[in-house]
Length: 238
Image: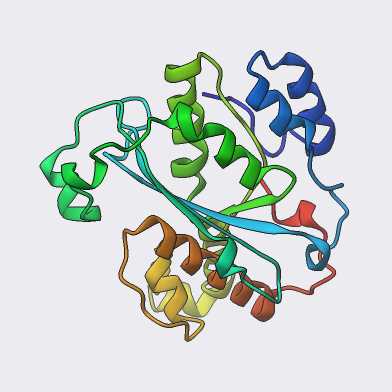
């Protein structure tokens, strides 16, 4: 797993060029070759793609991806017709307690490809865009570690994390003497709870494509409420 933080990677475009030269896998090399935006690019000028994984558990060192959903969007539109969803054969066992959460059963995964078989398709959908997720430790760490296990090479790319954005907003809103005096707790920043604050509709959780759509809508709302459209992407990506 990568050990970089956004503080260390000051220039993502330059960093991905370095990764292109270092990469041994041609699919990853092509992904890095597509590069990314200059860090001063306005978010109104960026093509985003919301990404969500369903997994067999929460530990990327022992668990694996079983479903992937993604949807391209920008600040004004969500491109539903270009949305994609895959079931993926897990590298570990599908446990009953995880089935209860995401509802994906053994029959759903029957005949599903492993991650290697859809990797090129997945990377083509992400290449050149800015990936938006809700809690980056799932999507970034799972993809990195699952690929290390399958092809002996991990992956790293910049992401915008709507959970981190919401955490920062709520901390700012709940700062100060009055909040301290009333012992006011910071509200939940889970995807569904965050969406409620922006009057977004309730969706059934734990479906990769639905959650990707929900994340795209949440990001659009966060920007509309709290940011200017000419905000530079460097203020948001990690």
